[in-house]
Image 1 (cartoon, rainbow, N blue to C red):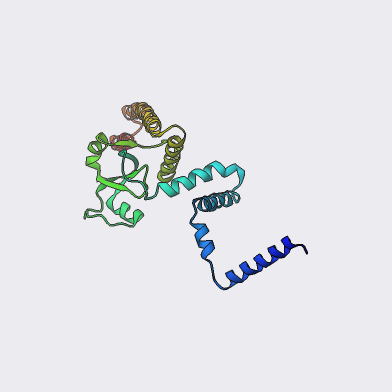
Image 2 (spheres, rainbow, N blue to C red; image 1 turned 30 degrees about the vertical axis):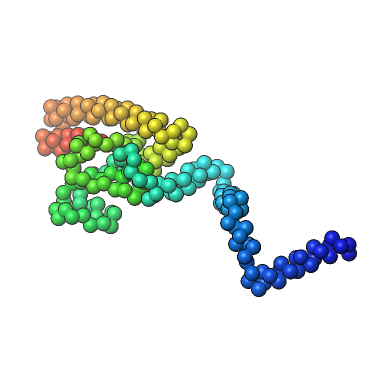
Length: 222
C-alpha cells in the first residue's frame, strides 16, 4: 500500500473508534453550520417529494405550504374571512366539539373561518351577520361546491397560490372580484326561482304554505 492509502486507513480507523466511543463533538459542530443546515433542509424536501407521483406534485406542494403556514402560524392581518355555514348552536357544538356560552341550542349562528389561519373561527348570531360582513372581507367560495370543507380548501388553495405567484394584494383583489361576480349571479338565480315560484302559486300548483316555505329557502341562499 502506498503512504496515502495507509494514512486514509489510519484516519478512518481513528474516526470509527471516536464515534464508537460516543465522541460526536465534530458532528454537532458541523450541524450548526448554515450550509449544513441548508443541505439537510433541502435534502428533506427532496426526500419527501420523491415519494409523490408527478401528477400530484403541485397539489402536494401547495398542501404542504397551507398545512405549515395556514394552521396557527399567521396572525390576523387582512380581516379576510370565509363564510363556512349557518347552523344552530347545538349543531356547531357537535361538529366542532366546542361549547358556546349561548344556552339556546336552537339559535342560529354564522360560522366564519379565517382564510389565512384555519385555527381562527368566528361564531356570531345570525342577526349580526350583515354588520360583521360590512366591516370585514368575506368570501363564500364557489357556490357549485356544496361541501363547506371542500369550498374552504378550494378557496384557500387559490388564495395561497395567488399570494405566491402574484402577490397578496392581487390575491385578495381577485378573490373579492370573484365573490362579487358570484353574488350577482346568485341574485339572478334567486330572482328567476322566485318568479317561477310565484307563478306556481298563482296557478294553484302549490299551496300558499308551500309557497312561503320554498320562498324562505330561496331567500336564504348565499
